[in-house]
Image (cartoon, rainbow, N blue to C red; front, top):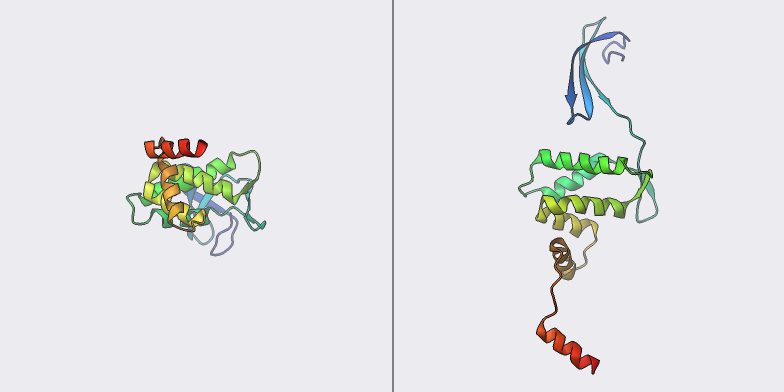
Length: 167
């Protein structure tokens, strides 16, 4: 590791500690030539995930983009920022554990909605309204029904209409 100040290749580690919920190691270092102190992070290198967008375009998965989307969906809710960051890590981890390295944007949307469903209802609806391309009020109603998995039996009026139509 080269010193960012003088580019000398030799330094010593002053302190190491776990960071990012155990996903990386933070090391405090000191250059042996100029005594400049700096911090490095050691992370597991993952094989990049390629996202296939609706337009057919391919791009690398960007965790920071996912985090921005989650923050936007969760703003003005009771969801803590630390929980949003953990959620982004969980989703990225789910994607990394897949066998294939290519994932569609629709699969990512489904994964996010799955996680948001149990986290916060408002965040779920906000995210769905943006990324499922709602066109009107009925789309919101359908999303709320899906959120609660409502399977309401038909009313007696609906049954009588069905019976009339079947005659």
